[in-house]
Image (cartoon, rainbow, N blue to C red):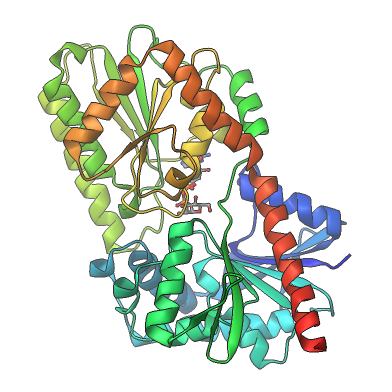
Length: 461
Ligand code: GDG
């Protein structure tokens, strides 16, 4: 069986090891043997030329790390990856901060990484690259003569052509993407956006089998909506005791939001929608409570410190206007909670509020549903702009920009009869159990293997 080589920005750490992606990929790497490559947490003084094996105790697969220099961290990671690609791919071209040194560093890092990977590849190895940090990696590997199958999975949305064109070297990015054998996206919407850009910017031809042909190359493109470890998550949430200090849900209906503090997650809009609920339903005073957990991320970037300041101001305004001596309507926690605690909080919350303005998938929506008590489940209020909305049609789907509509959906969720809650939860759960994280990785890898067969047949003809 061929080895699988996974490349991702971060390696799974013992802290993140409960995360679905880490579990699923660890499982498939352990079954087939392989290597997981990612950045280490260390900062190097010089760009290294070798991957370092980490945690030698693993026998079935190895983790190999590479260090970023401080300059690469600034220019490749915070710069091109998170100040150019992340905002543009999330429909926020207005927040793009494009600089030539970012562009140069991004391509140089990908070239350096390709050289390090090429050194350890064996014939038949499958390479599975994760996410927007490595869009040109396949092109760099091909330049070095690597002919192994290489797949990409993009965890974030693919932008519409108008947005993509804001990036100065977008045609080069597309050309580089066509060096992958398989491009996996989260949703059909993303597939359409990608194909549309290939057609508009590169005059690409769409083939009958769903692949795309441009620049003399051909790539398979399909959606593979990422899932979670549904069964495991449900089991853990049903086992864990609720944390102390959480008010009794019989007395107070808990509404929960859990997001990295990112401008794509629609948090100010969500806070304002909650305020609208309090204004339009004064009878809820003292009986409802909104808990928002928003751990920090990518600190050092202005867009992130700005959104933090805005949220703190809004939380203060909303509590100032609506709180009472024995009631805090909104609790906002700007740090990460332990994973075990999340499950039981989800389970206690009558409403899960997931209202991003743009999101590749959104795993919180899936975790919230998996954590519910099937006998007395809470209700998911979900943005139409989360990739998850394509699968989770039994949630209350909302436009996160429409404060009134979100407030109404929360109200409807709070009042929803038990029968309807159970029915919606049961059909959401069926899909989450069917299309879980293992389904996602096996389906993707099967398709990647198929592209190899396809290529062999075409070459033989
Ligand atoms: C990207 C795409 C796509 C959050 N707060 C805490 C915490 N979390 C965990 C959640 C969830 C994960 O972090 C967040 O995943 P999301 O999917 O919601 O969002 P991104 O981080 O933006 O992920 C996204 C995903 O990749 C996978 O493809 O769905 O669209 O943007 O698992 O539970 N975990 C702990 N404490 C917290 O306070 N322990």
